[in-house]
Length: 303
View 1 (cartoon, rainbow, N blue to C red):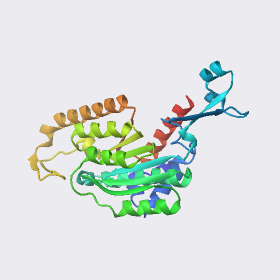
View 2: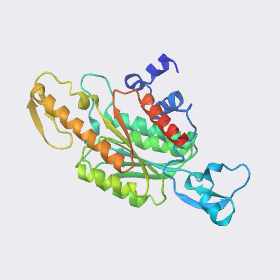
View 3: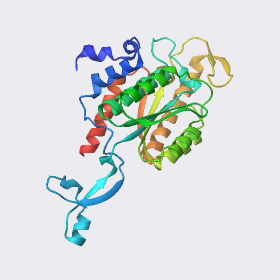
View 4: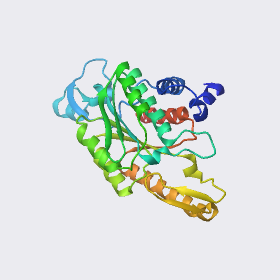
């Protein structure tokens, strides 16, 4: 990977590439395609059945307990041998509209859409598996069932490009709807800033984790992480009619402590519930973030 190609995929430059499908292809082919071709298989799988061992089978999957009882070799067969079904769940609430004030960076929603489209491309076009799409704010606004193929991928991209963030956030309700609608055990990939009642967030994550593997891409604007404001500033709520003029210097220490505490709680919750948490800033090179995460998955699989 050359330094030029890394620059090419930085957020500010990526924003100038026309079309979400083209962005996704550049991100995946530039960073991810060199990794394992099926990075989303082989994790949190369910045991399906035994079958008799035949020469050439991977001996790592031999069931030695059954051998001890029957003196015959059997292989454990897991759901990973069937096609993966993933659902991309994107927060389209008003808070996702936020764009950093000084830098020409994408909004949280744009960044989340780039990430979702990239993984959709990876899953449907490279892995030849099935991906669905869910857009939500206070409730689910759009749900496309999981399918594969170029036509379905382009349909997902079309719906993402049409979406406009609006309304409040109802993550708990949305995840409950997804959990009830998706019958087959699979992968749920959530993209959100999690600007909601934390109790509802945790409730929704735990409910969906009972049946599915969950990846949580926590997307925050760089402003939200560093609080760079200097002059007297008017802060406005995106989901509530709140306006407040304040001196940032008087707020910075308490604000950053609150953000740090929130992120620590989220990490702890995800660890306790076996949820993969990927923290993202809109200033990050998306290709680098995705490639680093997928490399970690590949390393876990080999361990």
